[in-house]
Image 1 (cartoon, rainbow, N blue to C red):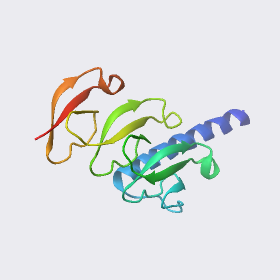
Image 2 (image 1 turned 30 degrees about the horizontal axis):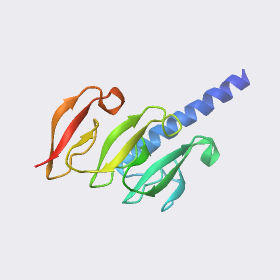
Image 3 (image 1 turned 180 degrees about the vertical axis):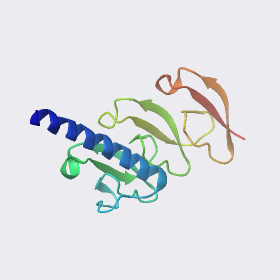
Length: 147
């Protein structure tokens, strides 16, 4: 029974860590007592510096609460679900198994004629047009064109 409870607590802790980092990434906040780093590994819930994205997840990091690797944004970089999307970038593909199973999005600098995924920002000066249901690993994609 104790072994089962430990497994449940570990899974629960991991799930809580994923929720915490997603909330922190979306709101720009962090939980109390979280480690933070300008690049490199940080504990779940730590703020992500401006211009940085989350590119790897280690579920056993930070005492089994999970840790995330932060690095400066760059073109054609796979980032974990919940990572900030840096201004001027769009989401162009999705991998459900990426980032140790939490999902990953391909970030690219916006350009005329790029296909963008759901939840991707559309930067000023661009608009979405044609839809393709097969794009972004079956999530659908929109053709983004310069106005």
